[in-house]
Length: 130
Image (cartoon, rainbow, N blue to C red):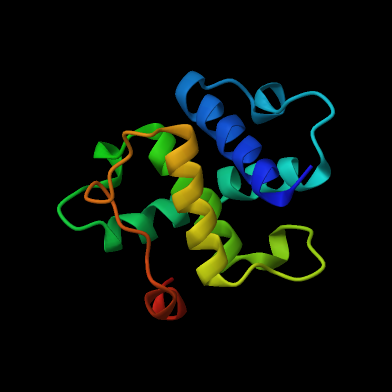
């Protein structure tokens, strides 16, 4: 399974966890690759920190106003950008790659997703973020 599909699976599991309150382990597909679980867990465990980053960079939107699916997409991208050590990979994805994956996930998961709702930090902002 390609990493982009695994990232999408992590987004869906995180979204279901966020929306239903079910434990993350129940929202992960059975037999999910280790990357999917590690990515979803890392994003869930750091949700408060990631939401603070989203809040700082979302112009005119608070993180509470952002739809749960979009928020999950951003959390997954941000955890790979800010905490690459939390996700098993031979080589961490560069920030530009994480942003590209997030945009593709938004197009795939939710075609109505709008860039005006929340903007991912640029790689330059990422380097300044915490």
